[in-house]
Length: 236
Image (tube, rainbow, N blue to C red; front, side, top):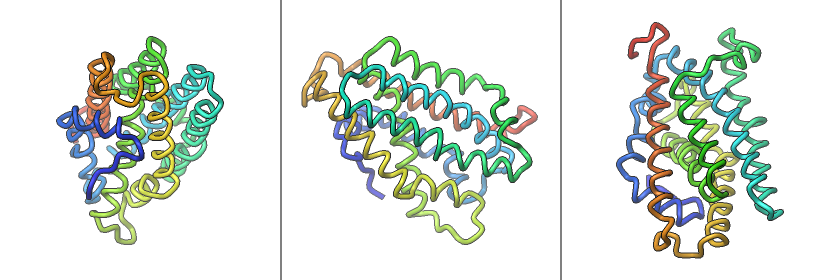
């Protein structure tokens, strides 16, 4: 399945420059296990619990994006993404964990793993230290990566009735999340054009943006790796 840029050539250029880190993220063994259904349930639940915590900080980061802008259209887009993350994306986590006897109170009490701490604080720090574009580039691997993974798995991983992770795949392959990716793409392009100009890869800021994107991809791969650890601390 051909990768798309979700309306953001900047994202496509960043992905192209960080190909090794990007592929390690989107083709991670955890993702393979989601697609073919071989991922152990305890690993999936471990991931969901950490991702619930991650989404809290992801929402904070999008709220920071609102604060970083003074343009109504940008603020509206960032606020909509924050709301979708905390209202829509969390819904799957809450429902799946509830079915396994883990209520939302227990989810909220989840202790962050080091990988979760590293990734979420990296994103927040990028936004605090830099401008809105720095923050969007740090957020991009998560936003676009889940869209690409969901769409690819839905297209290639035949989803029979009862597929253990079919609901996860469908949620990220579905029109709601794919539209959200296009919203992020439009936002990132507009902010880049406003702050730098149309030819971002030729700007002095390009090396720093590439480093931010590459680091976020590597942290995403580490996050999947955290999910593969069984509850007794050994690799699953």
